[in-house]
Length: 410
Image 1: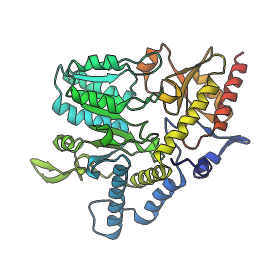
Image 2 (image 1 turned 60 degrees about the vertical axis):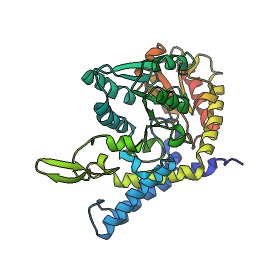
Image 3 (image 1 turned 90 degrees about the horizontal axis):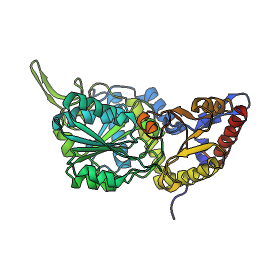
Image 4 (image 1 turned 135 degrees about the horizontal axis):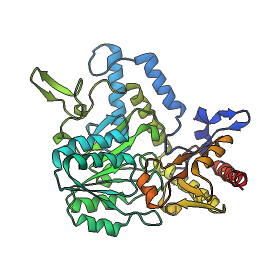
């Protein structure tokens, strides 16, 4: 039998969800695509590090330094296990998914791409997977082209196959859209990229927190993701890379801990993964990251995905019954727990502000995906995003809040 989610226990594990924003106005948090709330286990892990083992890593032989090093490297192993990486050496700790993608752009791409080489992206990318490639195009003259998004929020795979005939060197795309919720067929897209001779980079910022992700099954060359979107702390993320690619890539940042030796006129970089981790890292955050993946692993990612699928199906059904509401993206069976919508005659920021009066936290704007909004001819959307601590009651409060917005605006 598949594992099921204990939603009542999950609710008890997140102290912030018991907060009243104002007297009698409890928090209804529907902004997990931007950042997730943190369970007690994550808060405790970081507190425990600072109270008992705070020291720098890799450099000391005293007890605290050894404890801190073991904790940090243990966190790397837990993250590697979570995404089924063959080796923990293939997991590089970064600040976030954005830095992970930039690391690839500044090292692998600048070492391997030249003027006229093609990079394939998609029209649904987050700015983090657009701007680094725009910068590379301006610097090196590489060409960028884009897989179109269909009217129902899916990638046009026929157009993708035509683009692949042009012999791209890199295909970089979101595994799951932060606006549409679309879950892209990553394994198929990676396979097609490899058949065309391209390296494949997955932006897993939204998929790793919500779906079972196995980098070996996906055959991904690179995978970028962030702790704070999967119950962990801000300030730490990860880049998974194929080992032979990582070993061939030049260092990203220079300084302490990324070196094997330094002379006045030369240096030798360290081995993986330390070659890409210059300076004192986010050690306490690594402890929180490890606790977050342990929490999710205990729940079971299949159970997480199943619960969110049922919740978004209910949310779409309720939202679509509201006159004037238009939800963007595919049907529930093709998306994660994200509902981006417009309300006729009301700006998304006004919707969000009025919902906030009732304690309902949603996001309004272009969600760092301006080209996608331009594709649909709108400046912004209101986005409600769901996670393991949300319930159908939260959806009902959102719907009641939207009806209140409609009443206020006549």
